[in-house]
Structure formats: structure tokens, C-alpha cells
Length: 493
View (cartoon, rainbow, N blue to C red):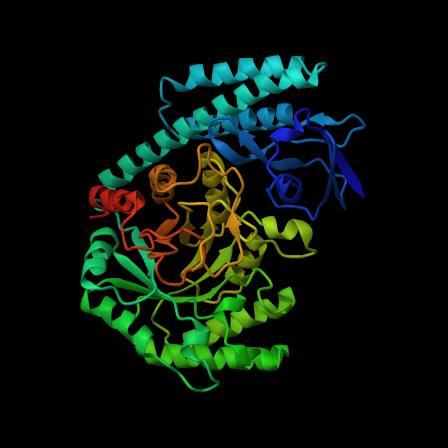
């Protein structure tokens, strides 16, 4: 059993769930199963291995809010590490490494970047050399983190702009799909806004609505959504056909929770969906979130068998339409408290190598939600994660949610909440808009990303993640909707 210890001189700075969210990971950013304890100013994290590793920790950055920061590589030692200093070291380390990689690839660095990195480095030097007074070292460490993140934002913004300029000169308009999940066939007013913003619609069947009683299907609502897409000549991504979250499943499925019975029912349900809608969709989203247990405590092997069976059934019924699978929490935060053999990336790699005929892999990034979401990450870390998944060698589809409020959402179906202290000054429609403004260009700049799909369109009907829609409960568009429309007009029209 290995242990790393950290001193936190100002524990009142910590967000409420910090100890639960912190974890250690290896050089490939794959989390280890960890046990965390916190007492006074001391943080201890235990794991099975004694290898050097990286600490991932939710840090409340002054003026910014909570960001999941990463330390540099740390070895086990007797003396505890000074947490803010190590987070500052890691922030600078990631920044400098990425500058070197992108500059070598031909990126022209912005003139203001080097002075900003220099200021962050000077602040870090003051913090690192001042650790004899742990409290005094916190202020320059915080300054270094803040400046380092500002520099990372500048770097990734310029990277996205330069890559998009190159891609636009080679192919205009870009062919990236930009979509959102419908929850009902839009009215004329909603439909006009949707068509002005997106070139793709995602229609997601909810099993308990489609088959409330075994073998008795209700198609009206789903038929209306599919027909609306066909009437308006908009691309249709249909699915996920299989998703084992409790709120998606019919009650009768739990009468017999044996794996073989659930598998048989799932395959029959998928058969019914594909037979009814084949020839009407452009992309099958076969399965989502099967890297996690969901409502049934099936083993990883059983979940792999379910996915393979589902893909085989879709391919047997419709051999021409492309298929994708999607994976939740791509950083793998959920495995830090569970004994699992397969990380999200390994789960996906196993299926891609199985030569199932997949056209791509989806990554679900529900930013700022805990538990069950993606903890807040800075732009540089998001870029690095997409690059890791790009090594699978297949196109990526990114499914995105960002909250616009932190209060209770009575129509949300997921048992999750907006992370504490997510945004300095509060979570608002404006903060949702601000994050989308830098996130969307970064995602589309990645050559491997073939589609970006917003997870929820409206909030006046049931939706999964709290306050994540682009239209509020009264049907009023949020600022983020106009940002997406403007982006599409400039690059994808």
C-alpha cells in the first residue's frame, strides 16, 4: 500500500467535496483506485501501487472558480508536499510542455505569452523557495496558478484560431456536425431557432416511454421527432439505443435482473427500434455509458458482451448506416472509488480493436457536475484529453453539457448537482456562454472531432443534467444559443 501526503496551510479554501474528488493517476492520466483522508491541514491519499504519480485536485482559483488541477510527477517521501506549491508546479509544467510541442509543430506563439509565463514562473519561484513558511507560500503559489491558467487560456485560444484558419483555407465550409438533443418535435418557433443553430439533431428514445409494458410499444412521440427531422432535411443521430441509467429503463425490466434476461429484452427492444427507423437516420448511437455499472451491477465482461451484441444486431438489420458508441466521464473520475479493470479509454479501445465496424467513439463531457459528471477542467487539459482519445484512430463525437445555474432543477433526471464554487461570482447563463465561447472552437479545431452535440435543447421538459439546456424553462433562448448560431454561421454554414 502506497501513500502520499500533502499539507494544506489554508484548509478553509477547500471546496466541500475536495477530499472525495482528489485522486492520484499514472503518467497516462489513468486514475488509480484511491482512499483519501483529510484531518486539519493534512491530506493523505493511499493506493495499491508505490509508483510515482500525479495528483489531481479541485482547487478554488481566486477570480476563476474551481478547476481540477494537476501536480507534476511526485514520488513517495516522508515529508508531506505543500499542496498549492505542487499544483502551481504542475500547472507550469503542463503549460511549458504544451508550448514546446505546439511550437515544434509550427504554431506561432502570441507575443504576450512569454511575459505571462515569466510572471507565473517568478511567482512560483517565490512560492517554492518560501515553503519554510507554509502560509506565506500560498499567496505566490495562487498567483502562479492564476497566471499559468491565464497563459494556458491564451495558448489554447491561439492554437484553436490558427488551426481553424488552416482548416478553413483547405476546406470551407467545415464539415463538422453541430447538433443538439431533441426532447420533443419542436414547435414552429423552437424549430426555427434549432435550424438556425444546428445542422444535426439527436433523437434519443427513452425505453420506459417507448415500451412501458413488455412488448407493447408507443411510437407517437418518437415518430413525430423523426418526421420533423426528415421534413426539415436535417441530419439525424438516433440513440442511444441502450443506456442503463435507472431513469431510462421500464419498471418491468427489474422483475428479473438476471443478465441473460436483461440482455434478451435489450436486444428485442433494439430490434424494434432499428426495424422501425432504418433508412430514416444517418447515424446510429448504439450504446452510451456502458463503461459504468448503471442500474444493474453487471461485470465489465457482461457490459462488453451487451455492447457487442447490440452492435451486431444493429449491423445485421442495417449494414449501411454508420454506428457509434459513447463513454461517460472520459477522465475516469468514477473509478477512483471502485475496483475496475477497464478505464473508459481501455473499454473503448477493447471495442475498437474488436473490429465491430464502428464509425466513431463519443465522449460525454458534462462539465461542472458532481457526482456523475466531468469535474471542471481548464482548456489545456481538455485539449490533452481529446488528443489521448484521438489515439484510438477513429473519429470522435463530443457530447457536451454546461450548467447555467446552481439551484435545484425539478425537471432534471440525473441525481447530480452543480459542483460547489464552480464559477467565481456564481453560475449563470452568462458563465455558460463564456465557457462555450472558448470550448466550442477548441473542440472543432481538433481534426479527430467530427461532431459536437449539445446534450440538452430545452429545460421545460424532462432532461438529464440540471440547468444544462439552451432554452430556459420559459422557452427563452440563453446567450449560449446565439454563440453557437454565430459560430456555425462563421465556420460551418
